[in-house]
Length: 326
Image (cartoon, rainbow, N blue to C red; front, top):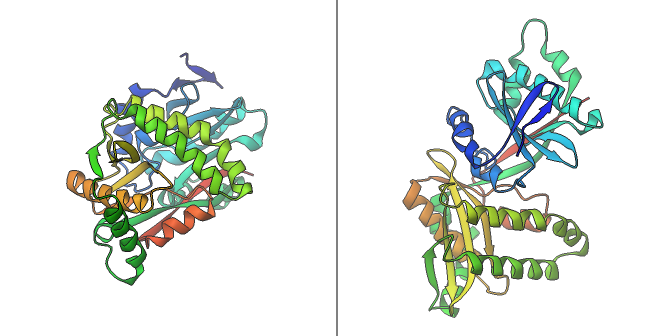
């Protein structure tokens, strides 16, 4: 795949070979958002849509959608370099895009918003920066205390405990295995297809239409995850009932104390399976990573998903912002 040249700037393809490059920059940042890992971005990108460049000593990740360039993350680098990098990145997007309004930077964490506004040089005041850009709060990441998810103590978790106990009682012969990307590949893809069918069946019509639009991308993400599972240093588990796969989940480490769940799917018709696999995976993440917190990402704007994630009593909600041009 060839480089993309825009406004005299060469953008390189974002491939598996980019992993050590972006991770060098991520390692220097204090982040807890689920979007700030190589795997989280790599598995969701189509093979030809991701590009990157080192701009003003920052790692800058772009995505091409319908011929228009946007950024999946803000420039990753030292505080003193971020503002100038953002200005250059918008210039690149504007040079490529059919309209000035397509350019944007997604998944910006709060600390970087502060740096963007405050780390300006003498010629450009904070007021002038605000005059040129719109900063909009989007979704939030849900972060939980890992011990709370394992112990499920108190009245607030009564329903979760009941659902897990019913699952164990109904399926005493269930089998838990550490995910193997080769051994479990076919079963995982079959479960994913069933999950899609079941979700559409029980979703409100207006949500189902939006949901189906993103299914192709999510199917690609699952395939990408399985193909590069070992290279991405992922960890996961699967649950079998009567030799049929009924659930799988995959995650990774974000920082020294926080892990993340990238993908989780269970058979919608096996009651309690989702709650059971979430608790078991919490145990695995604590054991393998010594994690204290779990980030399960955002709710993608789906009300039913928001309710489920809130029902687990998040320790905190971490906002994500998008930067637009005025």
